[in-house]
Length: 350
Image (cartoon, rainbow, N blue to C red):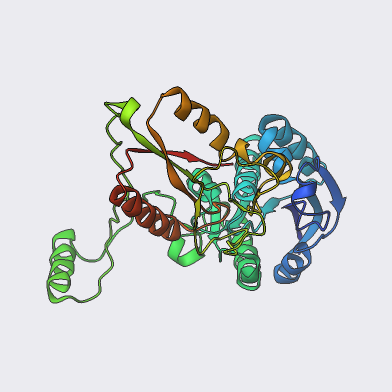
């Protein structure tokens, strides 16, 4: 049996080129396996081989999506693959966006099946799970031992079934929202009543029609009297006092910090820096006001645009931070701001 040809797409970090300082790495290709491709090749066994690896820096892809995608597709095509595997990206947002985007483009423009892997809260998952088979993974690289085997199994199943690997439960990919008709041996009314009875009894049951869950937040009312308003600063850009006294994590933050800026006229680089590990910190560290605009708000405060800048700012790192923790942070910060009579918040990111 002829082995299927697989091309593996990874970012600069997993290729061993470097971290954030090398995120501008342009697309390149190498024959055979690189980094996690070795584990992928092992899991594919005799059924398929990784004939080539295509690499691109997360920053380069994010800043040049259209042109980067075209470059990457040319590199992939040169290997004449039967399928493409991207990632796993875990909870790295830019990597997930690139992995999902490349897989989607491979399928639409090259007509080749593609499989990816990432954490379910990765932005790339939300963007591409409807068009790409994506294996759910852990939120960090420690989950590679389970992610790669699942991805290898899925890509082989996709090839074997000509793109129809079965249900998400059977094949191990994220639910895509695709409805498939099939015959049941019992009428719908019987099944519905059975589920209702189980629900009333508090017993477990599996719905046949799961409904989507939307997180809808009503926008706050506009400030009616800005000149008498107290404004607060909150950031997910990781600006902290030099030395990061509360040791806020550079990724997948488990906490937020609260810091006093009473009398502080500017968030200068001598006293503040970013703890964020998901973007190039050079410009933020040179002038932290770029992320936490204390200087401009002080000027507006003096000009009487608003009454007062709240004496504390709240900060955390959005890089890989789970939705659950983000909601927890937001609720705690919101309660404190409301208690202290703050009228509005300027929320900055990276």
